Image (spheres, rainbow, N blue to C red):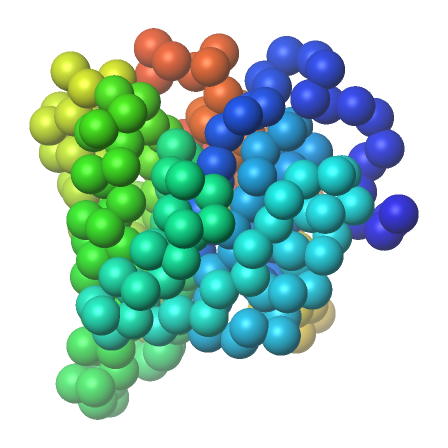
Length: 260
């Protein structure tokens, strides 16, 4: 079994997701991959969606190591028809969707005065409109079942802002409002909607930071380290579980105290 996985039987403990069907967008790598792993560990069947089928299949194969059914789906969140077909494929395979993890996102960083409009629009189109599109396809399944868990991955940048990321921060801040509004709309249907706001997480992007930039970033984090994708994934698994049934409309920071 891959070293990325823990071998303990999480599905037999608290936060069991046995019998649940999860769709993870942007699930082919990084935080999305870690979330797909954590959900499979706890008993969920997992559909992994991203633009690269090959990468999705690798993550799905890891989920199958837990004797879970897993599906790899290629889809572009900026194409509504592509998303519709992808969600239909999940339903055909699994019969429904009870957990939706809206994780897919891109960055196109740059200072405001130098940012091409296309960089603004592409980030907002993927990171905010893409969430609207896939949620609108999955939500009727949850309404019919009168049960659902929607977890949106926002960012500390959406809470505090970040120089050079007006597009990314605006989209991620929009997700917080989206989360709160959707939570109000569908609470009566037993559908909870929450957001996770990671801070600085160990990823290839943070690994590429210069020593001086990394030191400056670490100086701002009370816990004195970057987080791991596993720590974000465990928070997502909790929010997806029955134990989180009285939590909705909230934004949970996984940031080591970077934003208090």
